Length: 124
Image 1 (cartoon, rainbow, N blue to C red):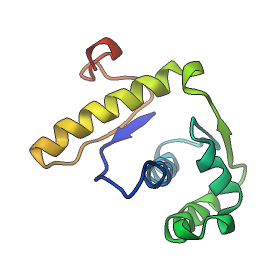
Image 2: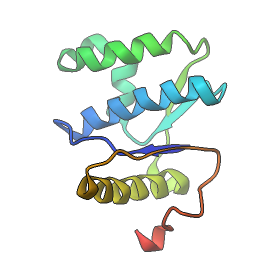
Image 3: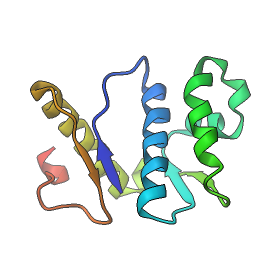
Image 4: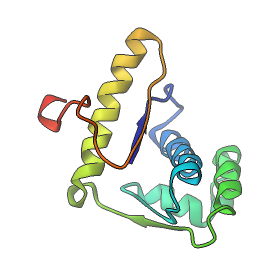
């Protein structure tokens, strides 16, 4: 699990693609993870059929390149209501991104558990 603040993108879907690429890069360094989950059905469609999304060609080229590094790559839909950790991380990432933008700095976090310094869902 991890979080990172990204600069604002053209759309939420652009942010989803960028976040998947960042996640895949980090999993190569920290885990043998082959399965990824997202609550964004459009992202799954993009990964499965990149040619159908020509306006995202540049972003999806990076995903396709990383995809080669995962021989058993799998991406599945996980509704946010069924994944409290993802929901918590999304809210926390949003909170951290707002905070980081106000200080003009980048934040990165990679780990297997939620650190105590992250605000809890009730605090976000």
